[in-house]
Length: 184
Image (cartoon, rainbow, N blue to C red):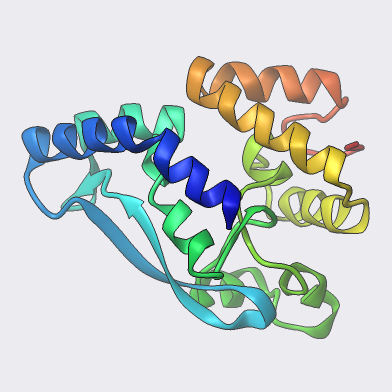
């Protein structure tokens, strides 16, 4: 809660700038809201800056997605207790059905709160099995130190962009773009 409050204060100028850019580029609404599954598969509404209109990514949306700034409103989700700073990606019920992740063997994903950032999000796992393996590695090998590293890398994404950081993380942890090997 303290971290999310500090994040909202620290990123307030950026959030105002992003809101203005979204409004100028494409008009209202500012936020995208979608139901996702959280802790113990309880539904909640995730908040993001809107990056699309009529199924197409907007000009500002491309920049927001590349830097991860579209996800800043999720600090509100953290304050509400729906999310954590670090954890597995929050999925929709349709995603869970499509992926076939509704069985008990996948409960580990919902034994913790979904995160604003996480290993799979930062590495950019392209295959479903890779994302699941990275989530399992993180939840099974969780430590405060790992969470701090993931938060630091998330700030690096904001500063340098997702592509550079993903390439660096894949090299650092010997993760192939299509296969998870080790994290920690």
